[in-house]
Structure formats: C-alpha cells, structure tokens
Length: 377
Image (cartoon, one colour):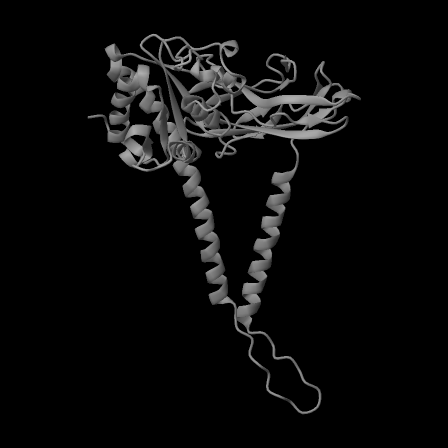
C-alpha cells in the first residue's frame, strides 16, 4: 500500500475514454481512492448513481474538482462515432465536455499519456481544447505502474495540500474575526443611564477601564491602517521614458523589474508584481507565487485579446504556464486590463516567470517578456 499522503482535501476527476483507457483508469482510480479516499475521486462509472443525468453529473463533478487527470491513449484523437465522425469534433462528446470544463477553471489539469501515447498538437484539437497542449504531461505505462503513480502522487499531494492551506487560512481568518468581535462585545462597557440631576444634566465620566480599552483600540486601528496603506503601495518603478528601472523587491525574496515597457503590438505592461505567502522570506516548495500585471492599449485601434497568462518554466525547464484569463477581452484605445496567475512551486531550484498575452491572429507577447526568477528552497 502506498504511504499515507499529507493532510489534504479536494477532489480529483479522471477523464478517459472507455474504449481505450478503461483499464488504466480503473487501476488509477483504485490507487487514488486508496490514498485519498473514494469520496475525493470521481470516475463516471463508479461515481454516478442510477437515474442520474450523466451530463449534469459530469458537469457538477468537474465544477467541484481541484485536479483533473486527462487520460490520453493512442486513439484518443482519432476515436470516431458510428457515423465515422471524430468524437472530439462533436460539441456534445463527453470527453470534450470534461476537458473544456476543466480548462475554463483555475484547476491543475494533468494530461496522462498512457502506454507511449503522444501529446496532441494544438492544430489537431478543437479550438476549445487547444490549451491542453500547454499542460505538462505525465507518461503512464503498465510496465512501470508503481513508479509512474508515485510521481503522480507527489504532484497531487502538493496540489491538494495547497488547497487545504487556502481553506484553513480562510477559516482561521473568519474564526479570528468572530472571536475578536465576541471579545470586543464582552469587553465593551454597557452604557449606564445617568441619574437625573437638578439644573443642568451632566454626563457620567467613563470608567478608567473603558478609557484604556478605547485607547488601545485606537492604536490598533491606526497600526492596521498604516500596514494596509504600505501594502497597497504599487511596486512599479519609474516610467519607461525615464530610462528604465532597477530591479524592484516584490516580496517573498522575489526581485522583478517593474519598469513600464511597450510591446510591438502596442500593449504597455505596468504594475508587474509577484509575491508569496512567506513575505519577506523566499518561497519554499509547496508555496504559491501570485503574479499580477496590467496591460494598456496604447494604439488608436481596438485590440482583441485571445487570453492573458503567466509564462512559467520550472527548474527542469519544463512548461508550467498558468491558467488563462481575459479570454476574448476587447481593449479600446487607452483601456487597461488586469491579469493574474498563480504558480504552484512544487520543486526546489530556480523558476523563470514572465507576464504574457495572445492577441487575435495568434500574436504572442515578446518571448520571456520582463522575465524574473524565483529561487525556491
């Protein structure tokens, strides 16, 4: 039996075709259910109850998942229906619907290449699935089943642990807020009606304890406001016309050059920022680096974005680009759009990261535009 995983939560969805990868999907399901619990792993045959609407159930499952595993066999691209039409070209094909739903969500999508199958090219896929080719794939062979599944477990452990941390952070923040409110309610003195006095009515002096609490509360509020203002200050350096800027500390041991630059397409990059939850320390394996930047249309024409994303290369120089944003967004002259991406650091070493976009007509941003580096411990 595999070693127990770290505490994790979240759902894993297995997308596959019964005609070619039913057996590998079954093996993988059993191992995943054994490691993470059957309630966290979804596979159509084993998870849909009798009488359920298949399409609705699949859509709900993908919509609630945190990781999607796409099993790709030799015939995944070419499998046809009874009329000889390629099934991936059918908008109602279940596998196509599963992958489409996954690609539109901010979840980890992992292609699994079964038994030496190759990764499809973008021009071999429907447009809605083309982004699958940018996901780093894992080779999966029955001959080395244990080795390949152990590699997959490492990625899933890290991803699901990150989900748990995010949920715990949110729960702790909400709990702290409730506790603080309750404490304040207990400590705040109740007003005592003043006894009527002859002549002019005077206010009763506040108790000393109330004055001390009020003073302490005022100090805390001032400190919080100062910290909030400091954190909201933009990290951009001087305008590009000033001759460029020096690297700017972006938090979490990350240095970036946030000097405004304009591409040949007329899109101006500003406000480039990157940070992890360990500010001001360097990120560690298992952390997430959040990247944010703005793009402004400096031309006198409308510019249509196919999408924006954050380009990523891990220490092994493998593609790890983030999910897409701003799909189909049209920028009017002078209009600005914000773009973001979250990079899960799952291995130690130097990560290369840069902001990027794709315009209509497959016009990409400059190669490794304003790239910066994250050294993960």
